[in-house]
Amino acid sequence: MTQAALVLFSGGQDSTTCLAWALDRYEKVETVGFDYGQRHRIELDCRSTLRDGLKALKPEWADRLGDDHTISLAALGEISNTALTSDIKIEMEEGGLPNTFVPGRNLIFLTFAAALAYRRGLKHIVGGMCETDFSGYPDCRDDTVKALQVALNLGMERRFVLETPLMWIDKAETWRLAKASGGEGLVELIVEDSHTCYLGERGERHDWGYGCGTCPACDLRGKGFRRFVAEEAVTR
Ligand code: ZN
Image (cartoon, rainbow, N blue to C red; front, side, top):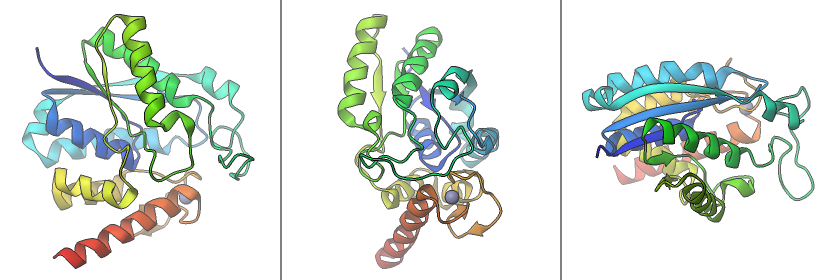
């Protein structure tokens, strides 16, 4: 059987790196994006540019990259009154989570992805969840993902494997993983065409890409990129 994967692909740095990782490993790779009424549609709009860019980087990636799917999850926007979906300021809430947190978002994404993977005959489901770097989203925890894998396999009578290549690495290492996979060309593609900023800003071009430069997502991406560049310089 063909080793085939479905990648949760938002158009951000992490999911683009995960897509390259999957294209190196699986003979057939499809992508899925979720539209849940995000305040900023820029990430979703970046997706086709990034897919085309990846296909241009390596001939085997062009052969392997298959269909792209978009699933509308408007209901998720309706039940989550957070800074991503409403016009309110991003801030930290009690418990250390930013108010951008959509409760259980990744559980919902992975469950829909599994339903799609079932229909498409794809065994591996790849997501950019990460425990190392960020805001303590409980649905990004390794244990959460492993528990969900068990639940999905029981509930759908399948042997899905939920893959999270970024789970234990930080943002600098994520840039390094991109470089190892697709060279400078992939690093440049991610800098130029992926989107991370919470505020949806695309105006100013920093060395790490476009964004407001100050929101938590820009801050993390910028710091990670600068550490990656500094460490590259040391090892050369
Ligand atoms: Zn920003």
